[in-house]
Amino acid sequence: DVKVTQSSRYLVKRTGEKVFLECVQDMDHENMFWYRQDPGLGLRLIYFSYDVKMKEKGDIPEGYSVSREKKERFSLILESASTNQTSMYLCASSSPRTGHQETQYFGPGTRLLVL
Amino acid sequence: AQKVTQAQTEISVVEKEDVTLDCVYETRDTTYYLFWYKQPPSGELVFLIRRNSFDEQNEISGRYSWNFQKSTSSFNFTITASQVVDSAVYFCALSEASGGSYIPTFGRGTSLIVHP
View (cartoon, rainbow over the protein chains, first blue to last red):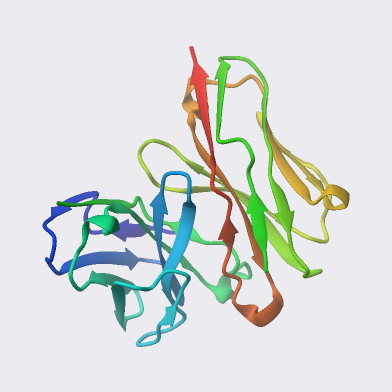
């Protein structure tokens, strides 16, 4: 089974802090994704990566950056956290080698509260 | 552009009732994939099913069944004899094959509450 883990389930930060959200997958997947989920808005794509050191902007990249130094790890960075970044953050991975790269597997999510 | 609509924001049923969650999609692609995910209160999205656009066969898995109808661009999900453990937010998603990105678009989710 694919295992996607996220470093924290709950996180409380102050406005202006730099925040790191870590995601690790253990299935050697090439593709990794970061979403945020807000009530009534569903999942919105922030950034994604198809390979190490590669990143692509999603639909709402503003205020975020990412880092993919190793294949298994994809980090989401909030350079200067703001209250409107209070949200649930979900990481996902997929791989074309599975024959079903359209299928994403998700981590447990990180609920971030910015005060 | 691809689009997914889950018109039902919240559904409340009593245990053992059958419930259908609606999903309507829009796409110009001929090759695409449809998904349902379940998000229990713990937060993790659990993959339930994937269906490609060339396979309109309905699928049944235990108490779960899916009805894919291209004619109405719908991919509805039915839970038979609902149980309290079915309480969750359910997301429908669409992934187009064109461009090779396969990045899904998610609906806004339907919150299902099953009362004992």
